[in-house]
Image (cartoon, rainbow over all chains, first blue to last red; front, side, top):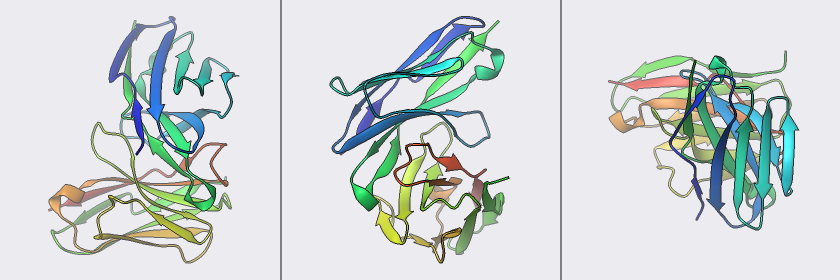
Length: 112
Length: 113
């Protein structure tokens, strides 16, 4: 089967840096992605890692270690609008059976 | 603008009364997904189409069916909704394996009375 673990809640201060960790277990791992979801909205894609290392997109960075089955999302210069739920999602499987399964989500609260 | 559209945005049905949710996309993506999301939970994959190949998750109830008549459209049929099926239903698309991410529609909020 597949499983992903991430912290349920994280609190941080505006302007600071926060890291949200994700560990996973799956067969046929292909990549790890991150999504942001505001209350009442749909998830929006943030980043994707297929290879080990760091991917940077503006204030957001994502890291993957395939050997450790571990990744994280790093958010810098936090803004109040970053308060949302963040999901890691693992892509696994082969050819047409490849699918994307979500972790349980981390609720990020930003305080002034 | 290229997008994923879901209709209706809100659906109210009675216990046991069939409903159909629709999804259309202008992204020309070959993969379409249906996720169910309940309050404060992760999106749960129900099934997906990779082109015309249908993939059903093992724990998706038989009560849920899907159709994809062409590249642009995908439907979710709930044959006999129960109270436990009340949720947000999210349609998403991707190109191939989704290395560029999933593109989600706004979702359909289903209420079962």
